[in-house]
Image 1 (cartoon, rainbow, N blue to C red):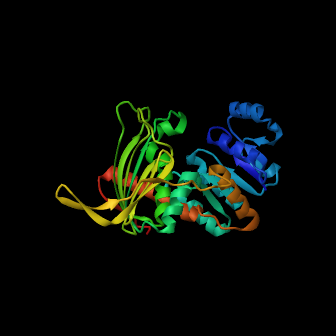
Image 2 (cartoon, helix red, strand yellow):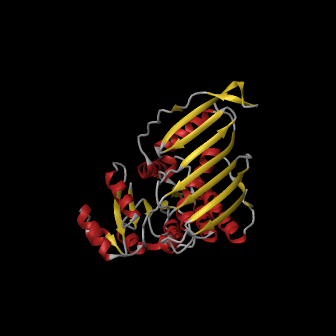
Image 3 (cartoon, one colour):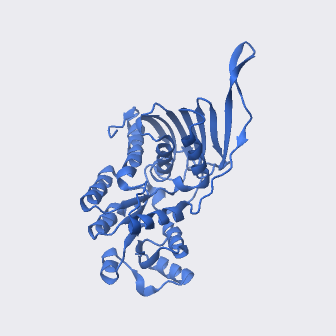
Length: 342
């Protein structure tokens, strides 16, 4: 399958390497507006400069392609994705789907009108620890989930558009964790209550820290606390998760998965009774042939060439993006925001 990749710097470099390493997908063309990035990547990866264009229309005119990988900054996602869909080319787009719900809805509408696939790169779903947790939840041994707590603390210095975002943690990072909540729970939130702030030492223009409470349609409560300008003891990118279930707990800590079963008998301690707990056990990780971007590229390839369904279509992913804007609305109003899309 031949693809046109738009954007080869920053996150585009990850996708550049992913395609170059693939036995199923090759580049028909590349699009990049920054000449310095073009020169650097062409030298680093031995790229054919005649196949690097400044705009998507130029590339579409010059080459024949089967699909598009959209790795532009989020503000350009709607324009580029809509252009590709109009040309009949399936799209694999970096997250977020768009920077506004109106733009996201426009992409979904164009995909529905054309019948062409638009897939969003929610690569966190396809990390080994995440798939390990999902397998345990799906097995049902621990019963229904009553509550989930999520902790995420990082202090990355990206520079560029993220530093200028009004809510960099919520928009550009927590979208991954919101999407994982939906993935883990097989449910969508019905209400959110959130507060955000920017610590005095923050290098971001917008709020880089947040505390969020979400109630899901299956009655599970989720507490999310995070910061993108943490000063130490960082969590993994996947975050730390604790699932309180009827028959025990499941935890994801430092990308390792643990379980602890609840025993049926009661014990008395200091005047109160509680269920006994079993020993904490580390869970053997699942094995994946492809992970993260490589998984998504393989899934995209099978969808385009064989018609196989994918999980993270724009029609589904707009629900994850909707959480982002509900959270922002709650931060700005100080009120509980109901999710009217459910």
